[in-house]
Length: 602
Image 1 (tube, rainbow, N blue to C red):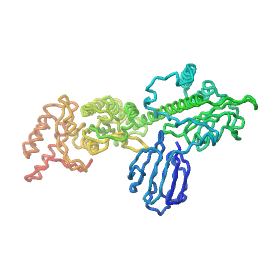
Image 2: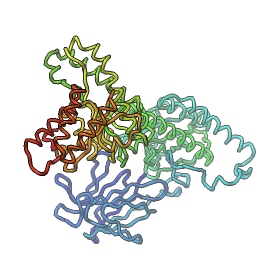
Image 3: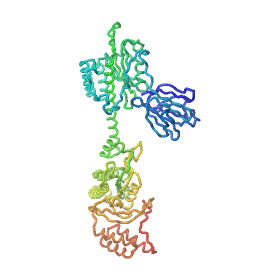
Image 4: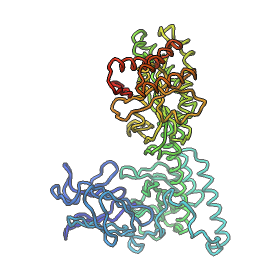
């Protein structure tokens, strides 16, 4: 919707006129004309207020947009310069306000900007009539207003027949638009409604594109030109205008006795087109029927119905595009969830469990098979890992080479996120035999995994960019999960959990505390637990006893206990690693033994 804009610098008038859409006011930038100049850029109309060297006005100072009704939204986009709004106080930098028109603003430089509703040309001066109120944009009426709180009375129309006519028009209007399946069908429904329902001799739909009126549909117009005057009034004032039968013809309406144009508005209230109707005389001597106010209301009804359906189809198309876009980057379940809750991409603090799964010896495997085979192999293995995450309601966050990152607990709240992550890890190991049977002859070794899980608070949202979405978590707990996955190789185990994750599991999960470590770039020690895929309770108990002896400084007892464990379970990697640490501590001697393992690599 247009605004009447007036800009002054003291007593000097810099600009006065009507502008439409998003407006931006600011100091001259390199390559721009001087104060008072207006230019279009990326859907924004920019007005230069002050010269390049006037530092009291920011380069990008103020944005305005006329909203529904007679209001304007003001945004001070400067980072340091405040503005003063007459009778409303200050508009501080970075703040936004919505105020009724007219509005006057004063800049520290002495410049003033006055925003008001453009004046409506009077009927006496122009021969035009208009409806009193601005046309309604799609989505503006969220509920019935008080105007409809009372029953419709017979006096509201000329007669019972008049009320019946209104009802029939409403029914037929809904029917013609209900049957429209695409944009072309909507345009056809609109012109048919104007001719066959309201009773115009001809009708057309014109769209306002790149500051030009473009006809996209017509019915019986026979190539007659549209009234540029009527179109301009609709564009400037966002309401229905029409000419009476006594209108003095101009070149653009010389053959017409009466024309009408009702605005087609976007959801933002901008004129994107008009529904245009005509009543044409049968001969040069005949007197055409005037356009009544009832005709104007019905025409506006058709234009609003067209705008509403265009907006609905646009939103459905946008939703479908978003669904397709989401599906390219997210799992199908996450895509559906984000489609219903797009605000989740902005980010939120959540309790999550993050899982990293890496395919062991992938680099070595890549050396012995060709590129086509390695792609088939990794796609198969990564697909199996992803299925395990998805089956437990997790989110596939990312694929990095031969590794998969998953998350539980967001975007859908899952109080048992640690349990879900642990079950997904166990399911991954359960897939190993089938994958090995399928690929062993080709890759010459078993398929194996390294899995790390950590639980804690993270900020989940779009951790990518506007160019590529990546829904996932960010924060220390995420980095720790990645580090824990790396430690599996050094501890010669397959699934490692942080203490936070281990505490979130019930007694059905077999686990043992392995050690305390300081991972790379993190000073706080972390207790690590192994999740046994087929663990022995006796092994776990004896190992944890030996670990406690080590942490108490009883190195000889710890070494003896670990030796016995190694004889009983010779393939237990964590036992061999802890025994090596105990022996090294004994060789180094000293009264104090640092039982926290300081890791030097990720």
